[in-house]
Length: 145
Image (cartoon, rainbow, N blue to C red; front, side):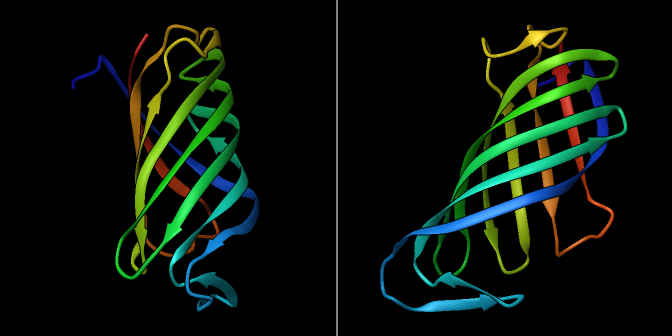
């Protein structure tokens, strides 16, 4: 789908609190000193800080599955701040996948949950993360307002 506007910004993870919900086999895999279930899923409460044309904060609740190869990730994020000078809040539905090489996700604006200057915004963002970055990650949002 084509949108009238596209903007690119950066975001950094400001908090990450992950708890295993289901561990199917009782086997774990270590990644960067953290143990994850080899098969199962966890719940994450995370915070993000956005800079650039997208300026503000986000709080997200994820469900992250774990299995060999690629595994799905889903969640909802409430963003509060400014997008290209339009102030307000909106909710993004995250749908993606992760594997040892990184994370790929599409974030769709959930209609009817926006406020202020973002109340009528529609569109979607894409994120592709490969490895850890101290200066954050790129996000590209295509939208209509």
